[in-house]
Image (cartoon, rainbow, N blue to C red; front, top):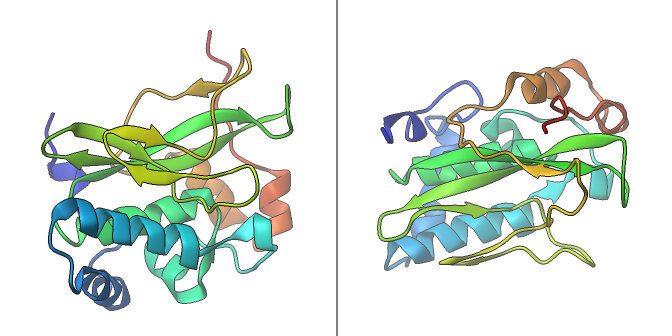
Length: 194
């Protein structure tokens, strides 16, 4: 697999933005190895950037630099920031999605955004910095995945691909609505997969 697309700066994963680069450098201080640096970036986004819906925080953010500036983002936006911080250090990082029930079970469904990081010794590992709370305990523990959510229902899925850029339906929702409640009412989804 060509890893070059997973290192590039882009409109949404703008690791070339001065504030993103500065935060990436700050997180690298005292880091001795790649796994430690990844864990620092992961825990910063997981713990210091508030999940927009959990905390009912506006504005709605999409670009990594916006997420960093405002300190909040939906899972999708938080994954854009984590990708930017890691790409700023030359660590290939992609975007992944799960299709999950919005409630405890059954329709409606929505996408959940997370990341995959390429660890030279292990290959791709999914990591989920959406933010912990009671019932959610995502960690960085290679080689095991420790994600926020487990796929349970028959219509829930781990989407198998790793994307270099966010899915269009995710960006469309984040850029269309100005309030976190509007986003929550229009969460992006994909067609049912058999």
